[in-house]
Image (tube, rainbow, N blue to C red; front, side, top):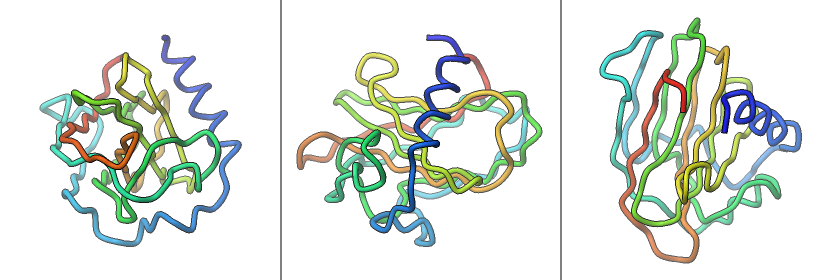
Length: 152
């Protein structure tokens, strides 16, 4: 799938979003945060999290799926000015991804690469990205969030 397709899909999801009352991006992230500027190293930046929760991500909008936590799993403060930025997840289980961007929109994905989700695209906004990693069913699972500027 090309960058343009990922960007178009992310923008389409963003256009469908509303305000989500269930996810509280004002809470501190459960597994930490990072501040990155364009050209960051190492790339990809990685963070270990436990995917899953008790909140149905479709409460954000129908394009979001999986069960997520109330507080963000991870937070990215991005300096902006880069040409592209991608946030993804790898895990041995089927995971989903929900990101609240600095523009206030919600970006969701499931199964971009096999069972692993990815959001992002060209000309990313500077600011705070709150990241939730979901699972299907009530189980939780270890997962790795990756943040990269390279084509996916």
